[in-house]
Each structure stands twice: as structure tokens, then as C-alpha cells.
Image 1 (cartoon, rainbow, N blue to C red):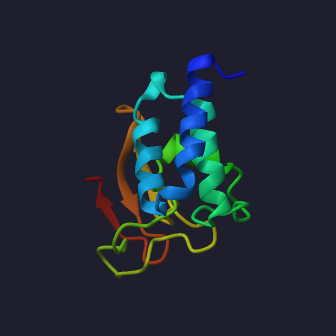
Image 2 (tube, helix red, strand yellow):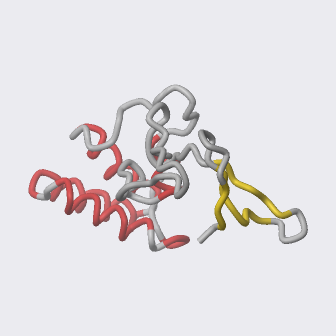
Amino acid sequence: MPTHEESQKIEAVQRILSRVTDDELLEALKDERELFSRSSEAVMRVMIDELVRRKVYPETMPEGNHNDVYAMVSGWGAYWHIYRGTIECPHCKADLRDSKIGPPFLRQIGISDRDLDRITGWQCPDCKGTWERD
């Protein structure tokens, strides 16, 4: 149940929805998400529902993506649904964007270092070439 403050914020967001562009709404969602622990899940859901209604975000996720739209925004940000620029293998130039599951997922394979406990490089699934993580 939203707090009184959240309810007021939700009402304010709902009043302006018809007057803002998709880009302005995405930017407002980005700003709300960046409040982290102070962000309002209820306010974010109102914004996300509107972006789904406007068909900016998909109504359902592609097969293979078990997240819902809210989880995608929470985990990857308001612009999760857009690939930025070309993402290709530096060796064979294969497109590494995952066309089946969609943004933000990539086809590149992470190479981990157990001692460092992190991904240190990438491998192309097509040519098997490797490169260091940026």
C-alpha cells in the first residue's frame, strides 16, 4: 500500500501523463529509478504501465527472458529496451546483439577469473575470438 506521500506523487504523475512525450516520460522514470532507496516502486509502476500502454515497452517479454518489464527497468534502467550503437565482435565483426531475446542481452560469452571473482574478458560465439573487458 503506497504511503500518503507516494499517493500524492502517483496522482501528480497521473495528471501529467497525457501532456508528456515518451522521451520525457522515460527521462522521468530514469530520474525516479536513480533515487535508489528513496524511489517509489508505486510511482515507477505507474510510469512503466504508461510506457507499456504507449507501446514504448513490450507488453510481454520475448521467450527466453523470464523478467517482467518492472524487473528490466529496476535492473538495467529506463532505457533497457534500446541497444546503443553497434555491438560487434572485434575479430569477425559479428553482430553480438541478441535478436531473439532482445535488449539489453548480448550473445557474447563472459570469461571469468575465479581468483578475481569477476568477468575479465569476452568470447565471440561465432569465431571464438576473445578480447579483454573494457
